[in-house]
Length: 534
Image 1 (tube, rainbow, N blue to C red):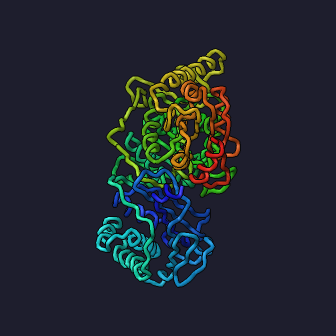
Image 2: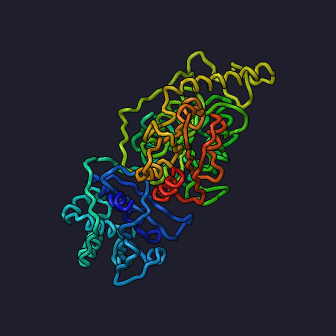
Image 3: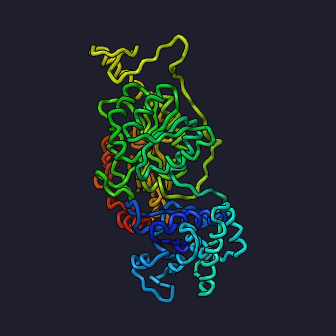
């Protein structure tokens, strides 16, 4: 594994809130993307309004990356706490912790520059590590910052560059850049762009980590005139406003974390009963209750597929990376309008907030509006009610009419189920003939992809993309005659494993579960998989 991991380089940046740690990770990622590297970037922060220790990681390689690599090559410390957290000892501004070189850069605070610009010291240090001529660094800096605090950023990047030059430090690794020119994008932004590509009219949300950046991104797009964004006073107002807009014929989406979606259940059920098209982004975080707001989990699979009271059809899709989030965002809006029902896109902290190089091809997106009569259509009366109703929209308590409406809604569900053969409900990778199968969903995709690079046995990888309706026939065929089925997910109860057993009658042989709010490690997964496979 040591030789394989030698193909990647990981830089960590740590500092206090306000030191520009996120900005450092973002700008270093932009620099590396401009140079043609494949990148995976993450940002970790505590659930505090102010203060605390923040940490960014940027992993880059010539080859495609799907998740963080936990082994740091260089740690750039913007304050002393970073060094203490990583248990190093300070020696003349340089700390060596095992292999990584740690640069102590707290002195940059004495410079007369905005706090967010101090992170450019890390950018300059990165440029030196990459053996990038300072002229090239300045050229890229101008493109990355586009005039924002440009002089301060250039000055501080020079400080970081010169600091390493004075130390005469060169890392032993040399990672050659690739030839691609992809963009670095997080899952929330990619999802939002998918919505826009499919003709989104309104986005409504109340801020709740880790879904908030969807709201922020789309709010900035209002100046294009293509979308309107509203932030009401609560999640209850969010979904009820959205139902009104949907009734009026507007393509509308809403978003929240799982806790915010929990508040929306009565109105979500209204959408199902009244057959109002609506897209709901639900981004999971560690729960229950307020839980650990800025860390991740996959504990809400069962909650989301059974959301709302009563029985009504819905679609639930869980993308595993930024490119899938983009595609699913567009698909969800089209599906909601095609079938006139709520569609949930189930994200999580890792998909939502971590970034990776991706290709978001808008040219492949179509706007499919379906056939729907809306208020204002000549000679048509459009009625909507939260009560059970007959086919004319008139409230009813007649048992025959009630049964007929339930049958009507679930006839739609059967139509959706029959159409699954034309949908990419499940993805398959690896050795398609292998009797050893790894099954996963959502953000565990990245660590699984990284882990299997280092296995010495062939495996078939099965990613479940559609959680509801569940493509039982396709999955059963893929799992048939398997010698070993290993389920990997980030929750305590193995919710996917139970869903597979419920829907197909097939029991997974093993589960690897993590539920401490932290993401899976590719290296640790490799060792666990080797043990199970051997």
